[in-house]
Image 1: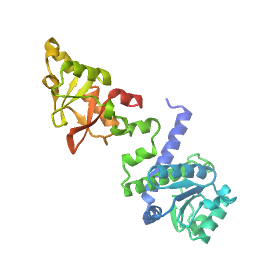
Image 2: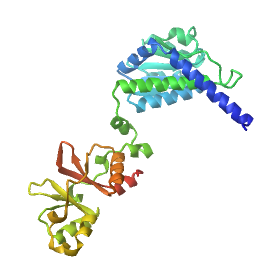
Image 3: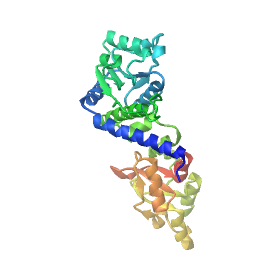
Image 4: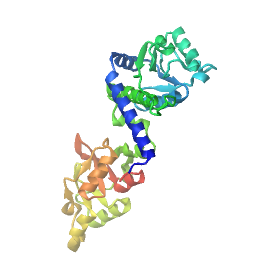
Length: 320
């Protein structure tokens, strides 16, 4: 049986979900105009708000910045005490106030008007100070707050946050923002690990294990043991990739191993991966093939080895 707490929680979530559907249905050409302004600016998107709107504004600025749109949060109270100097004529201001009458926004709004800085307002009151002064209004539907009393910002802040996400994602798609771009802005933590490229983790140069097809077993075993990956690439007379030797290959020829050459026991056409592939893809490939190493090669020149990637390299950064 549901408790009163669960009833309340379900009511809040359903109220906010319904508001988001109303918001989606209310979007019009003004959203497109706002996107054009933010995309074409030569400077940054300055996001501002006070109170709960300020917290949401801070998050919107962070989301824009991490998805390819230069953005910065400016606190409106601090703006009135010198931080207006952070805002230039090349910027666009995105101001948030549910009522459109937050007095702390007054100086910043006036500054944007004085220097003809484009102003985008997110508000639920079109005929408010913010609404009247904005070049573009992103109007929030007038729906009930989820608190039931109408005094706690709940539904309105959820809609504002969703509007910010919609702006960021629309801009991201318009800019053809890729996982590679996203990786550059998120090098740390689990997300950074998931977006690591093979080239970031692979071993090259003197650390890359390789022998010629004509190499005898002592030389081959020394190369495998000294490089520490449990494998070695095998190169032909032209220096291109002929195959790979793994511990499995060694085991299969154990009876007469020391009388053979590298070319006799190698596995031809080894699995390779591109240096610009996500390391996450390499982990999946190694798991599928039940192997611990991948040779790295350019897809346009698959016989030219560039490096080697071991599963431990991926585990070290949090993958796997």
